[in-house]
Figure (cartoon, rainbow, N blue to C red):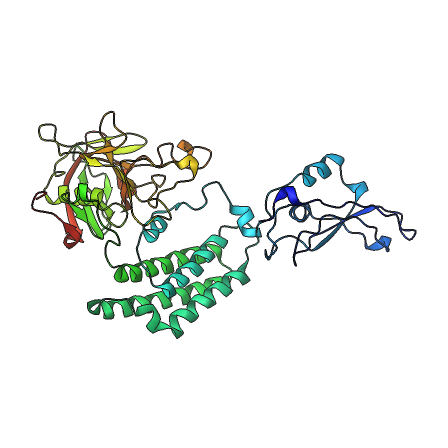
Length: 448
């Protein structure tokens, strides 16, 4: 990045005899250095054109790397007489780096943080196959570009998809090389599904259907995540010695909650048979890759039947599940995996304002975390937990929950948030069961 203090833009003003208009010519040279801003006059009066305000703003930004591509307009003209002095002053004082168009439109203080359940869970998978990562990156680029309002860069999306399809079809063996021997057939089927999803996405992009393209790219990314889960080696880090005796989850598990209204009313929709039913179902994916101790503690509690028959407490922001008052479980340490880090940090909240962000954010509706014990930021309850009903209206200016970085998020509701929205205080968890991933739980003799 070029230092702002080292740049000294040059200003000259010429009045050619062949033109009655003084014009400013702003040129951004990208070959070796920033050449500054110069002014000149146009020789043909009839060819003077008005500048697009956005292009002018981009062309006046300083601090652009010499190798930056697809950035500012190369040459723009504007008659001084048509520009208010205040606008000139504002534009000339712009000093932020000139970013590619899509990035400039969508950038935010916390653009790196996941905003959906699927994105958060996908990013937590410790998969290291570089070819699968390239396919995922291309698809995420398409998902990102689809967020651009109005005129969408379909050509760029088509190019990214073409690169992903080429990898998945012509380098098939490379995408499957990290699979365990007992998962080869399943992995091959997952890759076939991925190629099928990308072909459907290709049709949506070619016909320029943004809603359908958004659905197809989400399905494609889910197929990528399924393949990565097969390739994940388990925990890529060691549990600290101080917590080695605690239950831990070495991968993913799925928990199903069956809930009822306290009056037994038919309040929920039967997703299989249709109609109304008194039982609501909630599916939770528990992630041990980001929070193995917290996730293991929760799965162990479910297997022990701790939450069967528990009465719920609910308000506008959360659904809270209390533990047993007569025999509470011992507390567990706060455990958060920061973005860009290899292993979780323990007993220390993240400095979100300083740029530390979690892989599994609290700022997603359906986030599940253990509650803090009273008067402690470093330890969590061993049995009390809640589902966070995140609403952007409750967030700060950055779009994040005010408590982001202070809770150990260990999973998300992946199906059933509509059921949770109908639950009130006094309603009941009839049963909680681990329906997948039970074998990922490790319990030491001391913990058992």
